[in-house]
Length: 329
Ligand code: A2P
Image (cartoon, rainbow, N blue to C red; front, top):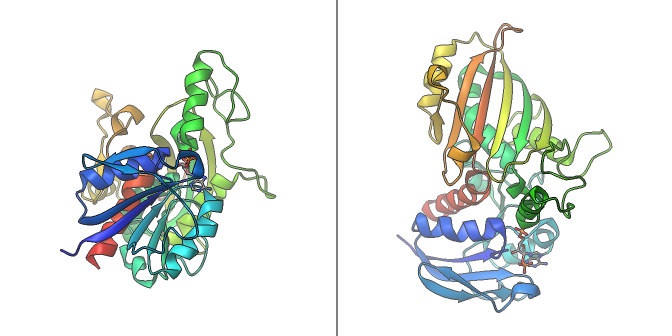
């Protein structure tokens, strides 16, 4: 197998550090490895495969050297400026920010769902929003068989999704300190406010779930709505997903379909109180699905509970899986 040069941009952050861990675990064929961040952490050291690497400051010249793939998680404005520079130098950027996700020239990819879309990349591939990724893994096999008519998402999102600052707000909030990242204390609260509010009164996180679902499932008219909520959980996002289908459903077949789908583990044994939990999902790469039941208020609908590690499958693992698709293409 050919060996590639890989850079991690935003390597000191929560997702960046997990990129490094997942690259190590999945044993990608890496020749040269680079870690980049802002001037603030330039010169600090990070370990990859038992070897120390010095963090480089990300600049216009960072991609003058030959880099095949760069995994970016350093915020939207950093991606806006530096992803095109990397792409111009022949590097393929897998970008974890929201910056490029709606660009018609940029594929938005979940490897279990639409791997074929990486083929038309022009140097940038977007990694979807963490909440969208886990929902897509669960919805794709159902859409293929029963054709989705409408989706209602309600999310219960962990503070790690807001980076190190979000994590600290919960940790310090439990001790009674005032929040620095969130607009209200996250300890003992559920905040129906993730990212900024938009003109239609939805939060941007809600609209990301709506726009990204349509793009990934190649259905620009799909009826989708969402309420996204930050909850006092350190890691792993939980989601209630209500789905209505065009075709007549069989609930047992839906359970079998989900059990046999790549990337999904069904945990649904009510007699033994078994259903997906954030604490069980943390540290894993699968999407956990349970509480699968008919929505009795419509003819062909279901409710389900979908949980995944937002930093791994919702960000780093998905991006590394995209890198694997690039290497193997
Ligand atoms: P740094 O540690 O130097 O600030 P998180 O969201 O978990 O806080 O992580 C954000 C990541 O993005 C960090 O690695 C951070 O680096 C990096 N980052 C932020 N701004 C820039 C920038 N302008 N150029 C490069 N990296 C940046």
